[in-house]
Length: 434
View 1 (cartoon, one colour):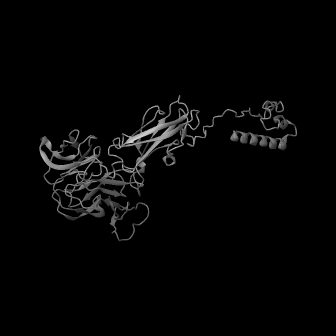
View 2 (cartoon, rainbow, N blue to C red):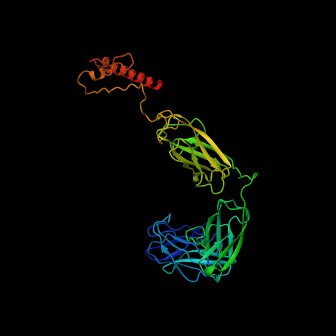
View 3 (cartoon, rainbow, N blue to C red):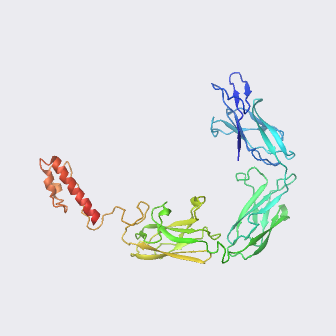
Protein backbone atom coordinates (compact mmCIF):
# COMPACT_ATOMS: atom_id res chain seq x y z
CA UNK A 1 0.00 0.00 0.00
CA UNK A 2 1.36 3.42 -0.88
CA UNK A 3 0.40 6.70 0.71
CA UNK A 4 0.40 9.43 -1.93
CA UNK A 5 1.93 12.69 -0.75
CA UNK A 6 1.88 15.50 -3.26
CA UNK A 7 4.59 18.08 -2.73
CA UNK A 8 4.16 20.56 -5.56
CA UNK A 9 7.23 22.30 -6.91
CA UNK A 10 7.33 24.86 -9.70
CA UNK A 11 10.41 24.27 -11.85
CA UNK A 12 11.46 27.12 -14.14
CA UNK A 13 13.49 25.61 -16.95
CA UNK A 14 14.92 28.89 -18.20
CA UNK A 15 16.34 30.31 -14.99
CA UNK A 16 16.82 26.92 -13.34
CA UNK A 17 15.22 28.14 -10.12
CA UNK A 18 13.15 25.77 -7.97
CA UNK A 19 10.35 27.00 -5.71
CA UNK A 20 9.06 24.49 -3.14
CA UNK A 21 5.35 24.79 -2.44
CA UNK A 22 3.99 23.28 0.78
CA UNK A 23 1.14 20.79 0.85
CA UNK A 24 -1.31 23.53 1.83
CA UNK A 25 0.27 26.16 -0.41
CA UNK A 26 -0.78 27.54 -3.75
CA UNK A 27 -0.99 25.33 -6.82
CA UNK A 28 2.01 25.16 -9.08
CA UNK A 29 2.06 27.84 -11.75
CA UNK A 30 1.17 26.83 -15.27
CA UNK A 31 3.09 27.68 -18.38
CA UNK A 32 5.87 26.44 -20.63
CA UNK A 33 8.71 24.73 -18.77
CA UNK A 34 6.75 24.43 -15.54
CA UNK A 35 5.44 21.25 -13.90
CA UNK A 36 4.46 19.59 -10.61
CA UNK A 37 6.68 17.11 -8.77
CA UNK A 38 5.04 14.35 -6.69
CA UNK A 39 6.76 12.00 -4.28
CA UNK A 40 5.07 8.72 -3.32
CA UNK A 41 6.44 6.85 -0.31
CA UNK A 42 5.20 3.60 1.20
CA UNK A 43 5.36 5.37 4.53
CA UNK A 44 1.69 4.89 5.43
CA UNK A 45 2.97 2.05 7.64
CA UNK A 46 6.11 1.97 9.73
CA UNK A 47 9.21 0.20 8.48
CA UNK A 48 11.55 -1.88 10.60
CA UNK A 49 15.30 -1.36 10.35
CA UNK A 50 16.46 -3.26 7.27
CA UNK A 51 13.11 -3.08 5.44
CA UNK A 52 12.88 -1.46 2.01
CA UNK A 53 11.16 1.87 1.42
CA UNK A 54 9.54 2.34 -1.99
CA UNK A 55 10.04 5.86 -3.34
CA UNK A 56 8.50 7.18 -6.58
CA UNK A 57 9.16 10.68 -7.84
CA UNK A 58 7.01 11.88 -10.73
CA UNK A 59 7.25 15.05 -12.78
CA UNK A 60 11.04 15.28 -13.20
CA UNK A 61 12.35 14.94 -16.74
CA UNK A 62 14.30 11.82 -17.65
CA UNK A 63 18.04 12.23 -17.43
CA UNK A 64 17.95 14.54 -14.42
CA UNK A 65 20.01 13.59 -11.37
CA UNK A 66 17.37 12.78 -8.74
CA UNK A 67 18.42 11.83 -5.20
CA UNK A 68 16.58 11.09 -1.95
CA UNK A 69 18.04 12.07 1.41
CA UNK A 70 16.97 10.98 4.91
CA UNK A 71 18.65 10.24 8.23
CA UNK A 72 16.75 6.93 8.07
CA UNK A 73 19.09 5.77 5.27
CA UNK A 74 22.77 5.03 5.32
CA UNK A 75 23.40 7.80 2.81
CA UNK A 76 22.02 9.58 -0.27
CA UNK A 77 19.94 7.38 -2.59
CA UNK A 78 20.10 7.80 -6.39
CA UNK A 79 16.74 7.28 -8.13
CA UNK A 80 16.65 5.66 -11.55
CA UNK A 81 14.31 6.82 -14.37
CA UNK A 82 11.60 4.37 -15.28
CA UNK A 83 10.23 5.82 -18.52
CA UNK A 84 6.56 6.35 -19.24
CA UNK A 85 4.89 4.64 -16.27
CA UNK A 86 4.09 7.86 -14.40
CA UNK A 87 0.36 8.53 -14.79
CA UNK A 88 0.42 12.33 -15.03
CA UNK A 89 3.58 13.44 -16.80
CA UNK A 90 5.07 10.30 -18.31
CA UNK A 91 8.32 11.02 -16.43
CA UNK A 92 9.36 9.41 -13.17
CA UNK A 93 12.18 8.04 -11.01
CA UNK A 94 12.21 5.17 -8.57
CA UNK A 95 14.29 3.54 -5.81
CA UNK A 96 13.90 1.10 -2.92
CA UNK A 97 16.49 1.93 -0.28
CA UNK A 98 16.72 0.02 3.01
CA UNK A 99 16.21 1.59 6.39
CA UNK A 100 19.52 1.70 8.19
CA UNK A 101 19.91 -1.21 10.69
CA UNK A 102 20.86 1.32 13.35
CA UNK A 103 17.78 3.53 12.86
CA UNK A 104 15.71 4.07 16.02
CA UNK A 105 11.92 4.24 16.06
CA UNK A 106 10.53 7.59 14.96
CA UNK A 107 9.65 9.80 11.97
CA UNK A 108 12.53 10.91 9.75
CA UNK A 109 12.39 13.72 7.16
CA UNK A 110 12.83 12.77 3.49
CA UNK A 111 13.87 15.30 0.85
CA UNK A 112 14.06 14.81 -2.91
CA UNK A 113 16.67 16.84 -4.75
CA UNK A 114 17.28 17.58 -8.41
CA UNK A 115 20.62 19.14 -9.24
CA UNK A 116 21.17 20.03 -5.60
CA UNK A 117 17.76 21.74 -5.21
CA UNK A 118 14.97 20.35 -3.05
CA UNK A 119 11.83 19.68 -5.08
CA UNK A 120 9.74 17.52 -2.69
CA UNK A 121 9.53 16.42 0.94
CA UNK A 122 7.96 13.61 2.94
CA UNK A 123 8.54 11.43 6.01
CA UNK A 124 9.95 7.95 6.59
CA UNK A 125 8.51 6.27 9.66
CA UNK A 126 10.54 3.64 11.50
CA UNK A 127 9.42 1.18 14.16
CA UNK A 128 11.40 -1.05 16.48
CA UNK A 129 12.87 -4.37 15.26
CA UNK A 130 11.34 -7.66 16.39
CA UNK A 131 12.93 -11.06 17.07
CA UNK A 132 12.98 -13.71 14.31
CA UNK A 133 9.66 -15.49 13.82
CA UNK A 134 8.88 -18.92 12.31
CA UNK A 135 5.26 -19.42 11.19
CA UNK A 136 3.31 -22.44 9.98
CA UNK A 137 0.06 -21.29 8.36
CA UNK A 138 -2.87 -23.03 9.99
CA UNK A 139 -0.76 -24.11 12.94
CA UNK A 140 -3.42 -22.76 15.30
CA UNK A 141 -6.00 -25.29 14.11
CA UNK A 142 -6.31 -28.69 12.51
CA UNK A 143 -5.39 -29.10 8.85
CA UNK A 144 -6.89 -31.65 6.50
CA UNK A 145 -4.95 -34.25 4.50
CA UNK A 146 -4.39 -32.79 1.03
CA UNK A 147 -4.43 -29.21 2.34
CA UNK A 148 -1.67 -26.78 1.42
CA UNK A 149 0.49 -25.44 4.25
CA UNK A 150 2.33 -22.12 4.17
CA UNK A 151 5.76 -21.82 5.83
CA UNK A 152 7.44 -18.51 6.66
CA UNK A 153 10.60 -17.41 8.40
CA UNK A 154 11.16 -13.72 9.16
CA UNK A 155 14.58 -13.05 10.66
CA UNK A 156 14.90 -9.35 9.84
CA UNK A 157 16.94 -8.50 12.91
CA UNK A 158 20.35 -6.93 13.39
CA UNK A 159 23.08 -9.55 13.13
CA UNK A 160 21.03 -12.28 11.39
CA UNK A 161 22.78 -13.89 8.42
CA UNK A 162 22.42 -16.76 5.96
CA UNK A 163 19.93 -17.45 3.20
CA UNK A 164 19.66 -21.26 3.21
CA UNK A 165 16.73 -22.47 5.30
CA UNK A 166 14.97 -25.85 5.19
CA UNK A 167 11.84 -27.14 6.94
CA UNK A 168 11.30 -30.80 7.79
CA UNK A 169 8.43 -32.73 9.33
CA UNK A 170 7.39 -36.41 9.46
CA UNK A 171 4.13 -35.43 7.74
CA UNK A 172 5.84 -33.71 4.80
CA UNK A 173 6.66 -35.84 1.75
CA UNK A 174 10.14 -34.25 1.56
CA UNK A 175 12.20 -31.41 3.07
CA UNK A 176 10.99 -27.96 2.00
CA UNK A 177 13.42 -25.18 1.09
CA UNK A 178 12.44 -21.61 1.98
CA UNK A 179 13.29 -18.81 -0.45
CA UNK A 180 12.85 -15.05 -0.65
CA UNK A 181 10.66 -13.69 -3.44
CA UNK A 182 11.59 -10.06 -4.21
CA UNK A 183 8.48 -9.74 -6.42
CA UNK A 184 6.04 -11.22 -3.89
CA UNK A 185 3.90 -9.62 -1.22
CA UNK A 186 6.88 -9.42 1.16
CA UNK A 187 9.14 -7.54 -1.28
CA UNK A 188 9.89 -4.90 1.38
CA UNK A 189 11.39 -7.47 3.76
CA UNK A 190 14.59 -8.88 2.22
CA UNK A 191 14.81 -11.46 5.00
CA UNK A 192 11.37 -12.99 4.66
CA UNK A 193 11.72 -16.58 3.41
CA UNK A 194 8.72 -18.70 2.49
CA UNK A 195 7.39 -21.80 0.75
CA UNK A 196 4.33 -24.04 0.73
CA UNK A 197 3.80 -27.79 0.81
CA UNK A 198 0.77 -30.04 0.26
CA UNK A 199 0.01 -32.57 2.96
CA UNK A 200 -0.28 -36.13 1.62
CA UNK A 201 -3.83 -37.30 1.01
CA UNK A 202 -3.16 -40.30 3.19
CA UNK A 203 -1.72 -38.36 6.14
CA UNK A 204 -2.76 -39.87 9.47
CA UNK A 205 -4.43 -37.86 12.23
CA UNK A 206 -1.95 -36.51 14.74
CA UNK A 207 0.25 -33.66 15.96
CA UNK A 208 3.51 -33.36 14.04
CA UNK A 209 6.71 -31.50 14.86
CA UNK A 210 7.92 -29.04 12.21
CA UNK A 211 11.61 -28.09 12.39
CA UNK A 212 13.34 -25.12 10.75
CA UNK A 213 17.02 -25.69 9.99
CA UNK A 214 19.56 -23.06 9.00
CA UNK A 215 22.87 -23.26 7.14
CA UNK A 216 24.67 -26.49 7.95
CA UNK A 217 21.45 -28.17 9.11
CA UNK A 218 21.44 -26.54 12.54
CA UNK A 219 17.94 -26.50 14.09
CA UNK A 220 16.75 -22.92 14.62
CA UNK A 221 13.04 -23.08 15.44
CA UNK A 222 10.24 -25.59 16.01
CA UNK A 223 6.47 -25.52 15.56
CA UNK A 224 3.56 -27.94 15.84
CA UNK A 225 1.11 -28.95 13.14
CA UNK A 226 -2.20 -30.73 13.83
CA UNK A 227 -3.60 -32.93 11.06
CA UNK A 228 -7.12 -34.38 11.29
CA UNK A 229 -9.31 -35.75 8.54
CA UNK A 230 -12.93 -34.59 8.35
CA UNK A 231 -15.36 -36.57 10.46
CA UNK A 232 -19.15 -37.02 10.42
CA UNK A 233 -20.68 -33.80 11.70
CA UNK A 234 -17.92 -31.58 10.32
CA UNK A 235 -19.13 -29.03 7.80
CA UNK A 236 -16.63 -30.22 5.21
CA UNK A 237 -17.18 -33.95 5.73
CA UNK A 238 -19.47 -34.28 2.71
CA UNK A 239 -19.58 -30.62 1.67
CA UNK A 240 -22.75 -29.65 -0.14
CA UNK A 241 -22.03 -31.04 -3.58
CA UNK A 242 -24.39 -30.39 -6.50
CA UNK A 243 -24.19 -31.83 -9.96
CA UNK A 244 -23.17 -32.98 -12.36
CA UNK A 245 -24.92 -30.43 -14.61
CA UNK A 246 -24.33 -29.76 -18.30
CA UNK A 247 -24.05 -26.80 -20.68
CA UNK A 248 -23.00 -26.67 -24.33
CA UNK A 249 -22.14 -23.01 -24.96
CA UNK A 250 -18.66 -22.17 -23.58
CA UNK A 251 -18.63 -19.49 -20.90
CA UNK A 252 -22.24 -20.00 -19.78
CA UNK A 253 -22.13 -22.31 -16.73
CA UNK A 254 -25.07 -20.38 -15.24
CA UNK A 255 -27.22 -22.03 -17.94
CA UNK A 256 -26.22 -25.54 -16.94
CA UNK A 257 -29.00 -28.14 -16.71
CA UNK A 258 -29.02 -31.20 -14.48
CA UNK A 259 -31.37 -33.09 -16.79
CA UNK A 260 -32.72 -32.93 -20.31
CA UNK A 261 -29.54 -31.51 -21.83
CA UNK A 262 -29.13 -32.79 -25.39
CA UNK A 263 -25.90 -33.19 -27.31
CA UNK A 264 -25.15 -34.89 -30.61
CA UNK A 265 -22.71 -37.73 -31.10
CA UNK A 266 -19.28 -36.24 -31.83
CA UNK A 267 -20.26 -32.98 -30.14
CA UNK A 268 -18.95 -31.31 -26.98
CA UNK A 269 -20.66 -30.72 -23.64
CA UNK A 270 -19.31 -29.06 -20.49
CA UNK A 271 -19.72 -30.82 -17.14
CA UNK A 272 -20.31 -28.57 -14.10
CA UNK A 273 -19.82 -29.50 -10.43
CA UNK A 274 -20.48 -27.32 -7.36
CA UNK A 275 -19.40 -27.89 -3.76
CA UNK A 276 -19.88 -25.48 -0.85
CA UNK A 277 -16.94 -27.05 1.02
CA UNK A 278 -14.59 -28.94 -1.32
CA UNK A 279 -12.33 -31.54 0.15
CA UNK A 280 -8.73 -30.25 0.52
CA UNK A 281 -6.60 -31.38 -2.38
CA UNK A 282 -9.53 -32.02 -4.71
CA UNK A 283 -8.43 -29.24 -7.04
CA UNK A 284 -6.88 -31.12 -9.94
CA UNK A 285 -8.35 -34.48 -8.89
CA UNK A 286 -12.05 -34.14 -9.68
CA UNK A 287 -13.05 -36.12 -12.76
CA UNK A 288 -16.30 -36.80 -14.60
CA UNK A 289 -16.65 -40.21 -16.23
CA UNK A 290 -19.25 -41.57 -18.64
CA UNK A 291 -19.55 -44.30 -21.26
CA UNK A 292 -20.59 -41.48 -23.61
CA UNK A 293 -17.24 -39.64 -23.28
CA UNK A 294 -14.18 -40.33 -25.40
CA UNK A 295 -12.03 -39.96 -22.24
CA UNK A 296 -12.60 -39.07 -18.56
CA UNK A 297 -12.95 -35.31 -18.09
CA UNK A 298 -10.82 -33.39 -15.53
CA UNK A 299 -12.90 -30.74 -13.76
CA UNK A 300 -10.90 -27.56 -13.17
CA UNK A 301 -11.76 -24.96 -10.55
CA UNK A 302 -13.33 -21.78 -11.90
CA UNK A 303 -11.17 -19.07 -10.29
CA UNK A 304 -13.50 -16.33 -11.53
CA UNK A 305 -15.96 -17.39 -8.81
CA UNK A 306 -13.47 -16.81 -5.99
CA UNK A 307 -14.84 -13.51 -4.74
CA UNK A 308 -18.55 -13.35 -5.55
CA UNK A 309 -19.84 -15.37 -2.60
CA UNK A 310 -21.01 -18.35 -4.67
CA UNK A 311 -20.03 -21.92 -3.90
CA UNK A 312 -16.80 -23.07 -5.55
CA UNK A 313 -17.44 -24.66 -8.91
CA UNK A 314 -15.53 -26.87 -11.31
CA UNK A 315 -16.10 -27.70 -14.95
CA UNK A 316 -14.48 -29.16 -18.04
CA UNK A 317 -15.36 -30.00 -21.67
CA UNK A 318 -16.25 -33.56 -22.65
CA UNK A 319 -16.14 -34.90 -26.19
CA UNK A 320 -18.97 -37.27 -27.08
CA UNK A 321 -18.04 -40.45 -28.95
CA UNK A 322 -18.85 -40.20 -32.65
CA UNK A 323 -20.21 -43.71 -33.10
CA UNK A 324 -22.53 -43.41 -30.13
CA UNK A 325 -26.18 -44.33 -30.54
CA UNK A 326 -28.99 -42.15 -29.18
CA UNK A 327 -30.01 -42.56 -25.56
CA UNK A 328 -29.60 -41.34 -21.96
CA UNK A 329 -26.07 -41.91 -20.64
CA UNK A 330 -24.87 -41.68 -17.02
CA UNK A 331 -22.22 -39.12 -16.03
CA UNK A 332 -20.60 -39.70 -12.62
CA UNK A 333 -18.46 -37.52 -10.33
CA UNK A 334 -16.85 -38.86 -7.13
CA UNK A 335 -15.51 -36.53 -4.43
CA UNK A 336 -14.60 -36.30 -0.72
CA UNK A 337 -12.39 -39.38 -0.79
CA UNK A 338 -15.20 -41.45 -2.27
CA UNK A 339 -17.80 -40.42 0.31
CA UNK A 340 -19.80 -38.43 -2.28
CA UNK A 341 -20.85 -40.04 -5.54
CA UNK A 342 -23.40 -38.36 -7.83
CA UNK A 343 -24.65 -39.37 -11.27
CA UNK A 344 -26.52 -37.30 -13.85
CA UNK A 345 -28.07 -38.22 -17.20
CA UNK A 346 -27.01 -36.75 -20.53
CA UNK A 347 -29.26 -37.17 -23.59
CA UNK A 348 -27.31 -38.05 -26.73
CA UNK A 349 -29.30 -37.58 -29.93
CA UNK A 350 -26.93 -39.46 -32.22
CA UNK A 351 -28.11 -37.32 -35.16
CA UNK A 352 -25.74 -34.36 -35.00
CA UNK A 353 -28.46 -32.18 -33.40
CA UNK A 354 -27.21 -29.82 -30.70
CA UNK A 355 -23.58 -30.74 -31.15
CA UNK A 356 -22.51 -28.04 -28.70
CA UNK A 357 -19.41 -26.97 -30.62
CA UNK A 358 -19.47 -23.50 -29.12
CA UNK A 359 -21.63 -21.80 -31.76
CA UNK A 360 -25.05 -23.15 -30.90
CA UNK A 361 -27.51 -22.22 -28.19
CA UNK A 362 -27.09 -25.34 -26.09
CA UNK A 363 -30.78 -26.24 -26.40
CA UNK A 364 -30.30 -29.16 -28.77
CA UNK A 365 -32.66 -27.77 -31.42
CA UNK A 366 -30.37 -28.16 -34.40
CA UNK A 367 -28.93 -24.66 -34.48
CA UNK A 368 -26.02 -25.78 -36.65
CA UNK A 369 -27.93 -24.72 -39.80
CA UNK A 370 -27.68 -28.08 -41.57
CA UNK A 371 -30.77 -29.00 -43.64
CA UNK A 372 -33.01 -31.77 -42.41
CA UNK A 373 -34.72 -34.46 -44.48
CA UNK A 374 -37.74 -32.95 -46.25
CA UNK A 375 -36.30 -29.44 -46.60
CA UNK A 376 -37.15 -27.97 -50.02
CA UNK A 377 -33.84 -26.82 -51.54
CA UNK A 378 -34.32 -24.79 -54.75
CA UNK A 379 -31.82 -23.05 -57.05
CA UNK A 380 -31.76 -19.26 -56.82
CA UNK A 381 -33.39 -17.23 -59.60
CA UNK A 382 -30.78 -15.25 -61.52
CA UNK A 383 -31.72 -11.71 -62.52
CA UNK A 384 -29.40 -12.05 -65.52
CA UNK A 385 -31.16 -15.15 -66.87
CA UNK A 386 -32.28 -14.20 -70.41
CA UNK A 387 -34.67 -17.10 -70.76
CA UNK A 388 -37.61 -15.36 -69.15
CA UNK A 389 -37.28 -17.07 -65.79
CA UNK A 390 -37.02 -20.64 -67.15
CA UNK A 391 -34.43 -21.37 -64.49
CA UNK A 392 -37.06 -20.46 -61.95
CA UNK A 393 -39.57 -22.73 -63.67
CA UNK A 394 -37.27 -25.65 -62.99
CA UNK A 395 -38.02 -25.17 -59.33
CA UNK A 396 -41.74 -25.87 -59.76
CA UNK A 397 -44.22 -24.48 -57.29
CA UNK A 398 -42.16 -25.38 -54.22
CA UNK A 399 -45.31 -26.66 -52.54
CA UNK A 400 -46.85 -23.17 -52.55
CA UNK A 401 -49.50 -23.72 -55.21
CA UNK A 402 -48.17 -20.78 -57.24
CA UNK A 403 -45.94 -21.65 -60.24
CA UNK A 404 -42.69 -19.75 -60.11
CA UNK A 405 -42.92 -19.24 -63.90
CA UNK A 406 -45.81 -16.85 -63.33
CA UNK A 407 -43.30 -14.35 -61.97
CA UNK A 408 -41.35 -14.07 -65.24
CA UNK A 409 -43.72 -12.13 -67.49
CA UNK A 410 -43.12 -8.69 -68.96
CA UNK A 411 -45.63 -7.21 -66.52
CA UNK A 412 -44.23 -9.20 -63.62
CA UNK A 413 -42.69 -6.06 -61.99
CA UNK A 414 -44.09 -5.21 -58.59
CA UNK A 415 -46.80 -7.84 -58.62
CA UNK A 416 -44.28 -10.56 -59.41
CA UNK A 417 -42.05 -9.44 -56.56
CA UNK A 418 -44.99 -9.54 -54.17
CA UNK A 419 -45.95 -13.06 -55.24
CA UNK A 420 -42.34 -14.18 -54.97
CA UNK A 421 -42.19 -12.75 -51.45
CA UNK A 422 -45.32 -14.68 -50.52
CA UNK A 423 -43.82 -17.88 -51.93
CA UNK A 424 -40.60 -17.44 -49.91
CA UNK A 425 -42.53 -16.71 -46.73
CA UNK A 426 -44.67 -19.82 -47.19
CA UNK A 427 -41.61 -21.94 -47.83
CA UNK A 428 -39.90 -20.55 -44.73
CA UNK A 429 -42.95 -21.33 -42.64
CA UNK A 430 -43.07 -24.82 -44.10
CA UNK A 431 -39.47 -25.39 -43.03
CA UNK A 432 -40.17 -24.16 -39.54
CA UNK A 433 -43.15 -26.45 -39.11
CA UNK A 434 -41.35 -29.55 -40.48
